[in-house]
Length: 276
Image (cartoon, rainbow, N blue to C red; front, top):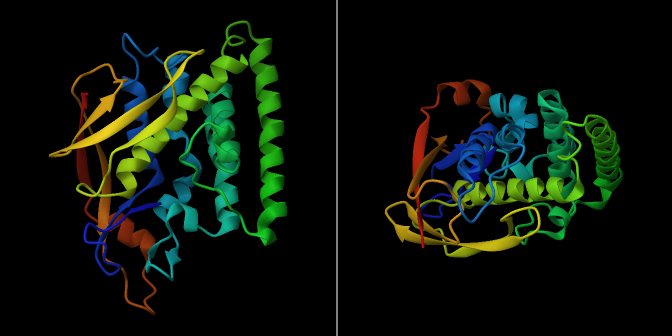
């Protein structure tokens, strides 16, 4: 679950609560429209768009029945999630994607491993940079399992002449970097509300398998943002993401969050992108 900070900054104000699958849906829209005369389209297209859309689908069960964070009195924000559940979803997401296609499993596993290892040093948007000492063994066991998974999937892809090219290191890392761009761009919007987003840039965005670039974003007002260089096929590009506003619960309350999530009205936040 992702909690967008309240526009007024108040801890008791309603917050826009976004399922990981809703975050993934926005990522998938970015991937679907990625590519133009400057930026190479995803390859293999279907598999890359699928894994970018589904990269957090290990959270499916938690999305539908989240746990209450006693500090915020709302569902746990993703990085505040109890560690054992966090590690479990880091395995479940590659499990889900591997069933879609071995290549989806490979890129998803790289994403899980990278979250705990500075995104392979490729991004300055590091989400998980510290795990408490008491959880190190559990975390390392999960990470070692993902490296084993990656080795098996690469071997399987290499055995098939139709997919061997996909598993080449340069290609796999270009697609991994595209996932990181779509992920961090979506989080830029998911975590902060309109009017509080600032100008920033996203490093290591793949123009092709051999060249990366930093893409800068600038808020222009009225839910419009310029990108430079512009990576999408439509200019302007209009997309949306969904969530629901939840009021923090009173201290001591024990709400049925599954029922509340089912009954909450789903709302949209719309975004418009233009070239700089």
